[in-house]
Image 1: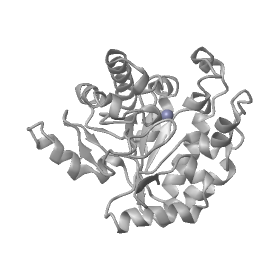
Image 2: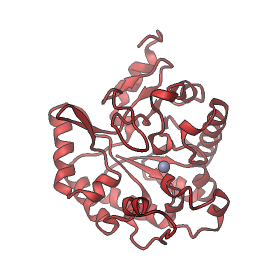
Image 3: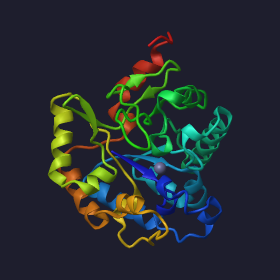
Image 4: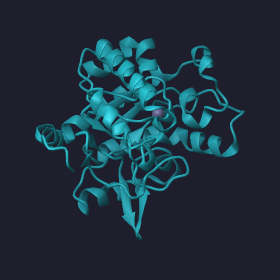
Length: 282
Ligand SMILES: [Zn+2]
């Protein structure tokens, strides 16, 4: 189970309407939403990985320490929420190093995982895995093996694979149906489709593929009261606001219907094996 820790005004779809300079003056919702998520996870005795923005850690250190204190994994979502595909290798390295140092100082734990904003690692920028390794991360969860208008690499493996740099890529889950990979890991689809469809997909991945599901959501997805970004176009608004009022209830069912854990624990064997492999050939 994974949570991408960012606020409602930082999502990529709203970037054209909200300048980064305005982030500091936007009413923040992330703390109260994370509180609710921590309670929800506790209620089901579930652990999760929190891919957290450095920008957020800088402003809410107590929240970061609470996430760690409750037994969850603290991981990185980069500092500034810039897409990996829109950065030079040097800028990307700087963003990752800054976030990792901030998160580790604040949380007092080692950060091993990284998730690129909007799953923005694909065929055109696989060099990003080298930088993820060089900045001291053991795994990435950033290459979505589907076709989507904003991201995705449909030909990428559906399950954990080792990049030449040694980093293990643990992709968000997809379903193989009629010769295509379909998203089955949360996000907008979890809000849009009826819950039994999501449950069916996750069961199929567990049973047919014999693999754990990588599910993700955002704190703002359980917050129907969040301020509306009215300037955004209709498609972005639909994707962001559809069924927000249903998500908390659905997550409750999801946590009841399956057993969930931290990415570093669920994939512990896989990560150990990758770390002990010295040859850099896949
Ligand atoms: Zn994000």
